[in-house]
Length: 454
Length: 115
Image 1 (cartoon, rainbow over the protein chains, first blue to last red):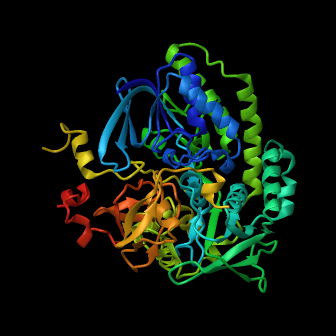
Image 2: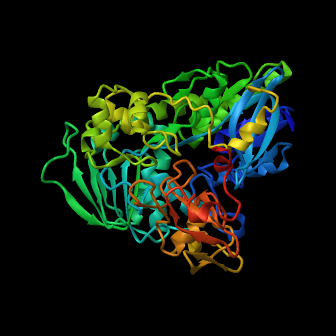
Image 3: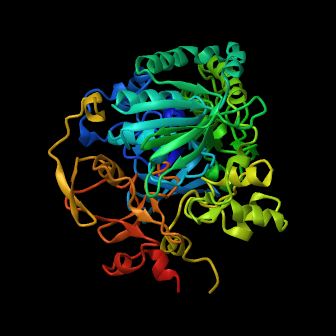
């Protein structure tokens, strides 16, 4: 298969990018792992569930309708259920390597002159005792299962952690019939208020969520944190406690809340694997881009959460700008993105930065992780084992991994990376994964049949 | 209100799959994980080391906690795999490459190429 521009990821950024480039005469192929476009933000019930009111689970549905209808009348070729594991540079462009879903064993290649990475993000969850119990899910996971499968994990839930995602998750679960016992947010109210002016762009959305919390009578506990999740083979309750101004749990404030579900989340992380294997420079944990959303690798653009967590509206603006730039590059003309998109990006980047500094992780969160808490969920490595490795001289994530196998399992450290870095007392570093997802060895063996030792 | 009512869903007729030998009702379009959640099941794997129960965690295919055996094929992410009529779903013990994993010849490339 050949195309001019391969857009990887059909969430808000990828959709906006594909539509912008296609409208400017570029042959665009939009590649996504899911069964239909939308990404995590516009995730919808499977077609066979025949939902007549999918908008009841969403914010900004009209924007989605515009994107969906635009896509339908566009010349964009959409490849769903394509799980991209690596993008390679070739003499005349790029090769996108994917596995066909859901089995993910049959390889497929797409050749493109240029690539636009809109790979999105995933949730960060800090470990706490009991976080591996069934019934404890990520906040985004609870939302994804609700939006996509129209199911909820239990009857009585706690939504806890930090960040703006907790609000729609709490109201969404409540609207779907779950009793939400509390929304537990570690950030204090005054800290959020201090950043309010810069958050103006987010206020209408935030006001909507606040009304939802009131309507569903969801108690909000700010400057509180989860201390422990209880249960033997399933979650039965959660102990929460207040945080002092110094970031430590205030003794004597612990209280037990019975529940069968805990939806936890502590912000988002960008998916950068494809960018990293292409050699794109990162800025911290996000793909570095210029004002046209170009990475430092010629022919590679990036937009949306992959370039820094900022939400769907920012992703749409960035995607549009990236799509215009890629089209101009392919045609040898000036980019000319919509001025409104440039203006929106500037304003929304400011809001994102404000949110980022408003919602901070509790200052001493690694201290809350008891030695017997499993930190690496895949390899079942406890915090105690990690601390032992640190005592033996391991000073960073990578050395801890070599000592303990933490981060070597199925998820390749995506779930535990932040925690390992936190326990080690160092800043999280990019993981440098050569493949973005597991690949059967047979696929790799057939990949370059003429190469390798003979 | 339940989620199906909330979204005004009118799915086609439900069908039956089995989970660890018992019949479970499934709706067309749902993933294995969604079917199990709807049936009140929240764990369908026991870990390799400590044998601890696990189920959905990230819900979007990133964490691999929800691995399950479907029709004899282990290590399927329940949150991604759509359910089909007659599916035989089973709790995955450890790697899943024990008794149920490779008998039916659908074993993984990894296993075949490991030696």
